[in-house]
Amino acid sequence: MPTGIIASLDHEGRGVTTLDGKTIFVDGALPGERVEYAVYRRKPSYEQARTLRVLEESSDRVSPPCPHFGVCGGCSMQHFDPVAQVAAKQRLFEDHLWHLGELRAGQLYAPIHGQAWAYRYRARLSVRFVPKKGGVLVGFHERKSSFVADMRQCEILPPHLSSLLLPLRELIGRLSIRDRLPQIEVAVGERLTALVLRVLELPEAEDEVLLRDFADRHGVVFYLQPKGPATAYRFHPLTGPRLSYLLPDFDVEHFFSPTEFTQVNHSINRVLVRRAMSLLEPRPGERVGDMFCGLGNFSLPIARCGARVLGVEGSAELVSRAAENAAANGLGDLAEYRVANLFEATAETVSAFGKLDKMLIDPPRDGALQLVKALAADAPRRIVYISCSPPSLARDASILVSQKGYRLAGAGVVNMFPNTSHVESIALFERVAAR
Image (cartoon, rainbow, N blue to C red):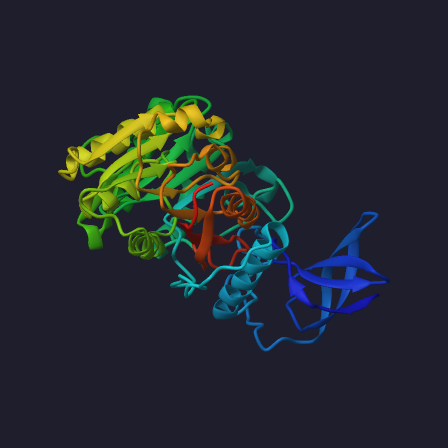
């Protein structure tokens, strides 16, 4: 079997080595290690392989705490020291900025990171009725597979959720619709835990009794979702507190439904919002744009700082939720929301937003290409860009710097998903010249 010395990690957390000039991506290998590997996919310019044996081990290698590591596809970097993970993500982020955008940040911010385990307050668990494996499986998919991992615990879920995996398997196995229930979406709020059952058939009366009993015994709230996310409704108990999360630094409480997008890591989100506000510096008398605003994660803190904020989002449901949250927090007079497809932004549609002194951009993975291209000569003097994709940020940053008169004043990583290869980041752009 071939061996190689691992030079770095790629964006999927795989070790990178070379053989006869060809790049080899090696699952489970860490920088500095010499490993023996087996190739499972060959392409003209690269190969993919898995580690068979670590011949020279990195000092950053640790024992994965999860017994399902290597089978479950949920956390591919558990064998990598958590602090070293953050440093590797920072290097990967800087490499993307330079190689894709030819940019270096004026200042590198200290990485935002926190606890490595029990951080995931949002999750989508798959459900399969597999008689050959003893009944129902509830968990994440197996690595590189559509099969559901045979999970009995999960280290990235809060302990009370992890402890529900086996009871949920038993419960669903007793339901008449056990083979018509493919997914459970989990949402943990400040005062309740919601479990959304995606049901292809509604439960029968006997099923409803089992569901109510389970919810009462385990202190959870069941929702049923017969079709798309908007069809989810509260099943049991019907009364009680609503789902919400807090931003204590800004005295803000965000209410949300269990199928609406919120950040999975509440503690890191609090630090991220605090960092974003310190960079944006919203002040009374200013008008700030919050692009891709969602349910108001950033726009409500902007308003709490005294600035007027315009939140723009493509989903009418999220815009409605953001306006509701603004009113609930006493910020309705400072927060305005509009529905607009920012992926199709033009100079005319952006001009219609009116003059904006500053802007925060928090797009999905595809980035904000059309929005940044549409910025005109009177564009905001300061932009804070939150990204969940280093390549799309590097692309958009290149446009802002080379075409729109901004400089990349600072940037840094946000470890929203510890023990995974996912890299989030925050960047500050300051306008230095008119076009």
